[in-house]
Each structure stands twice: as structure tokens, then as C-alpha cells.
Length: 87
Image 1 (spheres, rainbow, N blue to C red):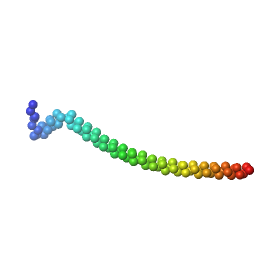
Image 2 (image 1 turned 180 degrees about the vertical axis):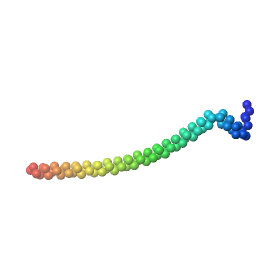
Image 3 (image 1 turned 30 degrees about the vertical axis):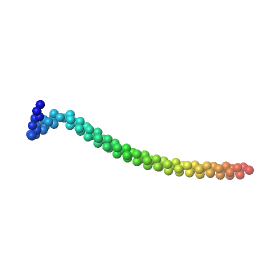
Image 4 (image 1 turned 90 degrees about the vertical axis):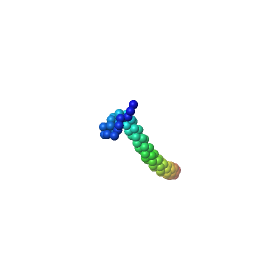
């Protein structure tokens, strides 16, 4: 089988028409790689957001814990006052 000459525009068009599957496959691979690359960037962005949310949650939990200790102290003080008033 001899290769047709591709020195004219119709020859190049014939070659492209004959190899459309290869061109579509290469385009699909390039598209898939580009999607994977953007997925990695998206994962890094989501990971950063999760870390920030975890830090905020820790701060809130610490603040809630401190408030709970203060509430417990107030309850103890009220019980002492209540006991003193009843006596």
C-alpha cells in the first residue's frame, strides 16, 4: 500500500478524513488530562476550605467550653446563695 502524496490541500484533507478516529482519540485524551488537572486544583481548594473550617470549629468549641465552665461556676454560686437564703 502506498501513501498518497500530501503536498496539496486535498491530500491533507484526505489524510485528516482518513484519520478522524485518531484525531478524536487524541482530543479526548487531552480533554481528560485537562479535567484531571482541574480536579486536582479543585481538591486542593476544597482541602484548604476544610482546614479553615476545622480551625474555626476548634475556636468555637474552645469558646463554648469556656462559656460552659462559666455557666457551671454561676450555677454553683446560685446554689450557694440559695442554700444561704434558705438557712
